[in-house]
Image (cartoon, rainbow over all chains, first blue to last red):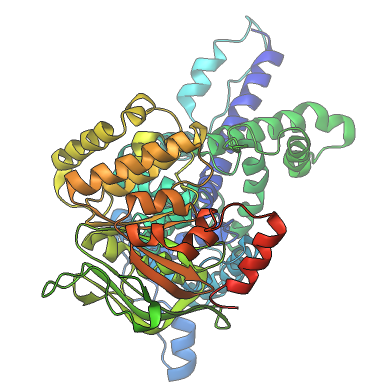
Length: 333
Length: 283
């Protein structure tokens, strides 16, 4: 194979990997949107909050330490050496479930039967609140997160691909980040698990029923409040996974919450109501971005990566507003 | 037999046994300001088919929703009176709790879950049950026996089925919760007369064979009074008349207002309207 072709493949592959990371975030949006018709603006911040909490548990930070120290004049910062990754992840999940419960209790319960736009506004408020809470609890410094996932380039893949190049060509093999590979595997497992759950369990069926018709769901005795707690817990779990991946990749910092903006074009492409759509949309955006950067970028001076996704989304809005896999709107006449 | 609502206490209640469902003088207000029901009382005896009749906006649906407690989701509340089901006051129970106790509503306009298959729709009805897969599967067969057409369409998305099939699906879904009482709202809406007849026939079967009591709200007075045992007529949030279905069917005013046949033969449309205006019970 020629070096150009191999370079193309490398870009493509890395695009897929980047796409998986976007998909992870988009997944959380889809779950909540499907079940409650709410576009959850706070999904990105939830990922940040989950990552912050996880790091806090792993490093043994005292939550609210700045606040406590300021009020009581103490010098608390750490309560110990911290927890092993597995235990910390478990505890963070407990925190995310508690958060889901509180969100239902304090926000959603009071907004039953309100316009979607009002619920959307509420999630914007939630986003800012959570960002502030994360800051207050764990401090605003950039933290590193290492839960023991492999990272760095794969030498094995480099060695394998080096032999693909034509004889005598100057080629050093493809680069692939192991962290991205594990993210992809985790995303696959997550999507399969979620699909099985929503297709084959009574709770999953109830979730889809609520997504279709709140009133009818109420009338057959499905408790909306319980369903919402479940949905937000699952979204919290997905946010935790996304937070771990993004946090391991680029450090746990407050700009992490901005990945939510990257999920938007993914959703528009894949459809707001489709779990496979979130994955495929993410992959298309990831690949599109990287290829555009590599091949169109040099012609216009680069930095296409930052806006390419949005242009793609705009084109989709014009020609297929429900996205690739979005629910067809069933209308009886 | 026929009485005005004001001096009526109970319909066909047998002495001693408490009625299955009892609504006592309830008042319902939407959004804190809109008074919709102004003192409605009614009784559903065990094993009865009771129908609430009346025109658009009379308060039929609101009465049913007050009982099933779907009102709260629409910002309505019962401000006066009480509702008793099997002897217990239920107005503070959630719909889910009420379904568990055996009282379920089939909403107006079917409200099937469009993206779920017919079978999945039926299974959501069993959501509150905890008696195992075997019992639920047996009930699914029972529903398919009553509605063979649903068995044929079991794998289709409910959104793509016909109006009649959706109505059957909605009733079947309610049956899956093993109810003792079904609140049935406008089963005839938007259906061909033949289908309406078929659905009411099944309602009667369910009543006699499965012992399910029905409280149904209908605009189609004619068919409702043929299948019901007792009827209440609602007008602007009040019960204006009630009685045995047979007596109501033969009542001159009911014939005039709701069945469209006057005592003295046909009148011109203008006369009818005038007569109606003059003789409305509440104006």
